[in-house]
Structures are given as C-alpha cells and as structure tokens.
Length: 226
Image 1 (cartoon, rainbow, N blue to C red):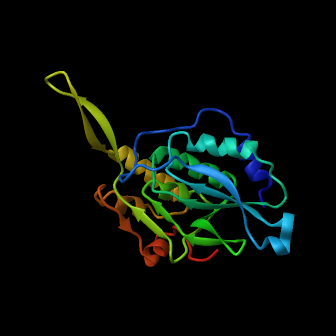
Image 2 (tube, rainbow, N blue to C red):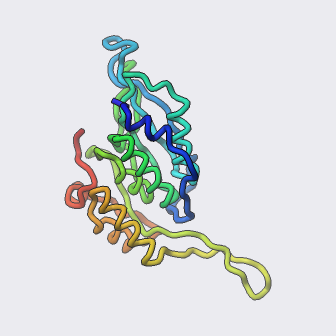
Image 3 (cartoon, rainbow, N blue to C red):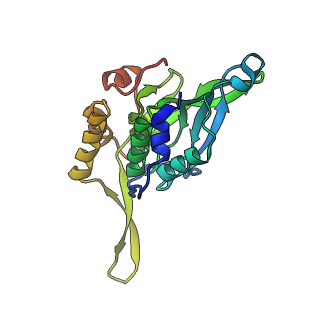
C-alpha cells in the first residue's frame, strides 16, 4: 500500500537533477502518469486496487512530474505503490533521479502496460529501453515478465560544436569514465550488478542489446514474477 514512503516522496522539495545523456531511437511523448484499476470491478467495486501507470520518454521534468502527480492525487487506502512502466528511454540523470524517488516510495515496478479485457485490466508486454533501465533499478521490487523487453546501449549526448566558417554542427558525444562510474555506483547501491552498466557501454548507441532472462537474473535486475 502507498503508506508513509510515498507521502515522503510527495513532500520532497528542491531542484531535481537533469542531464542531456539520452537514448537513441525515435522521439516519443514525454512520460505521463495515471492511475489504473486492477481487479474485476464487479467483484471489488470502489475498493479495487489502484496502481500507477508510467508511459513515455523520461525527460528532464519527469521526476518533478511524478512528485506533482502524487501531490495532486487522492492517495486512498486502495492505492498501491505498484508502477507499470513502458518507456523507450530518455535522459539518464533524470532516470536515476526518478529511480531514487521510486526507491523512497518503496515502489514495485513491472515492465508492462495495461490493457482492458472484458472490463478488467490485464498486463500486456511492455518495454524498458536505454535510460529506462536506470529508473527500473531504483524500484524496491522489480519485475520483467517473460513477454516484456529490456534493452541497453551506450549513452550519449548531442553537443553543438563551432565550425571554422562560424556555423555550428550537432555532434554526438559519449559519456566519460566519471559518468560511467557514477552509474555503476548507482546500480550497486540499488542492488544491481555494475556489469550491466559496463555491458551497456560496450553496445553501440544506434542499436539495443535485448537482455535475456538469464542476464536479467544474473545481474539482479529483476524477477519474472511478482
């Protein structure tokens, strides 16, 4: 249940960190948050559990948007600290900050998206690519169902570099060891193997390495069942 941990997240103040390290791939809508009703409404009615759905690209404002979402919500007894996440990736440092908020909330995160079937919510396969994986790491309980996909690759940023003719050129730049080590420390703090980060940094940014179930288990990223 939501409990005091989520209320502490709601009460957080101050600036939220952000950075330009990001994912490759097509642009996606910024991550949004909403509640979804779990269970059969004919059975549980107004007492059906409510869980959080997080879908879209993790942008600079995502951690703050999450706090604002919780602040604006009526956190009743039937609201559970369970988050369904479905994301193509986004900003790396914002993902880490989002992950820390999830840890403070004691949240369980499932890589999935909700679909309605016969008036009841069911879980469908989801994706958690690139920077999304660092948000997933923060969850107290992490679940990747067999049908869902987790993908990693090398992080990068775009910088405008001045040219001799006075123009600027958009250039792709990769993270230095300091940032990579910071990510490794973050992973270790969240109970995930640093090897995941180092493997990601060896994967070209133009593609994704889809993690196998054995890698997900070996690197302590998630389990297959709740």
